[in-house]
Amino acid sequence: MRTVKDVTYGLLRQLGLTTIVGNPGSTEETFLKNFPNDFRYVLALQEASVVGIADGLSQGLRKPVIVNIHTGAGLGNAMGCLLTAYQNKTPLIVTAGQQTRDMVLLEPLLTNVDAIDLPRPWVKWSYEPARAQDVPGAFMRAVAAALQPPAGPVFLSLPLDDWDKEMPDSMLEGTAPRTVATRVGPDPERLAAFAHRINASLRPVLVYGSDIARSQAWEAGIALAERLGAPVWTAPFAERTPFPETHPLHAGTLPAGIGPLGEKLAGHDLVVVVGAPVFRYYPFVAGRYLPAGMALLHVTDDPGLSAKAPVGDSLLSDSRLFLEAALPLLRARSPAAIAPLRPAPLSADLGTLPLSAAAGMTAVRRACPADFVLVEESPSNVPEMQDIFRIDRPDSFYTFASGGLGWGMPAAVGLALAERDSGRNRPVVVLMGDGSFQYSVQSLYSAVRQQVKVVYVVFQNHEYAILKSFAELERTPHVPGLDLPGIDIVSLARGYGAPAALAPTADEVSAAVGDALKRPGASVVVVPITRRFHSLLG
Image 1 (cartoon, rainbow, N blue to C red):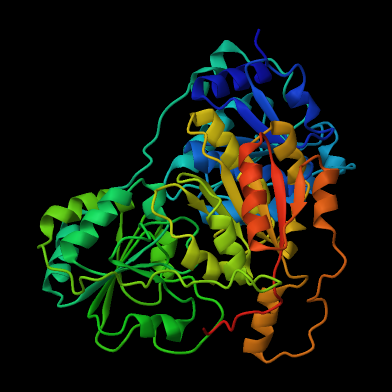
Image 2 (image 1 turned 180 degrees about the vertical axis):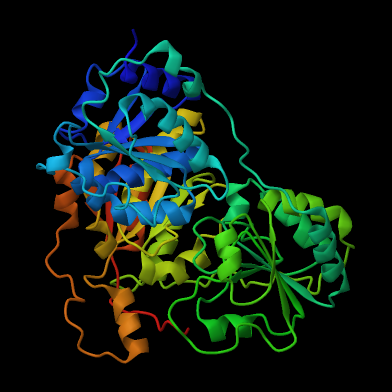
């Protein structure tokens, strides 16, 4: 008779979920023993990196990924990246071992107490099977829940003694693979009403968010913008690029303060937000949500985001299904402006040392190939990145939706694995702050061992520059702990087995990045930059 483990691995095999990203513990070894040859195990050295790698891999392959972490302690380590995966809408199947059922009432060492509550609210569904024979069916339900919109991570707590239990034939019916819908279409009446209001508007403006990238609606988004002749803003804190940033209708990225964002929309009578929250605000800057006389239409696949929007009328729909259904209902217009709405990138001073962030970004950009994947986790340098790295291809930019550091380094490993698995084989270039680099530095080990093509470019200013910007805005002088002296990033990288170089000048930066892109595997390039920081209000 087959065991619970036999049936579970058979189900995962049929679903095509044969990669497990994990960090093994004693409560997980019964699941992993005699690991099948047709499965792949990707080791990370800490659970935040486990979830980050799986997040990048899942996004890159557009499919769920199995995560295996160590009971409650490992789940605690993983929570920061799990929060990010939830806000990234990444369908992860997060599993953790639980103590032996015979002892769990006693709460011995490594018991995951209140296991289903620990990962909330950052999972869509959380469950510990009532009996061992429910484990395979729980995996099938987990996959279905993770994939249905809005997609996101789910959690299973799995007692370590369940795997060798027998699985009677009478209990196999509920363990067969099945498919679920992954898109929700627009209500026809609501769609017609939205189209009527867009046609009646005198000067509409579009705000696009990351769901457009997730739903593969890049071309549909361009078609709608061109039909309306309307400017397109990228929503604040967008984790994926929704619209080509070299397109003449692209206006830039909206600021994240309430007042400044509303001011950017002045001169329009209707804003149509597709695939983004309304809006991700931070910090608090008072003002009107919208200019006087402006209305807002919101299209999202997430009822929660619809409910909490402070203004506007909403329609529940997958972004691509909405854009494609709306397009034939909308009248064509001439664009309000013929010239590109954004000026060309500013020229940076490449000669003065230490380099400015803009000079460092420029030197990196000129070494990059035409087609590559960009990952960003350098919060204080985002304005320069947005100006210099103008993304013009779909699925080529990723960052973290949560604001929580420690995601970018491991996610780049997962994205690079996806590039290799898919045969696209684009290199991954990561723009890191020196503070961000410390959060998941151990993911370098996974990058090296997996031999993935990742170049980590670390902008080192020896400080938490973004926090100094916040201190200026919040009028909080003399905050301790904002300087980071004495960190040798080159030595840290080499300690994990990654080739590393210090590149102080623009020419050295370009050469070091170029060399890293030519060699196999992961590399680190450290770029010293000035300690100048931005005002958050521009």
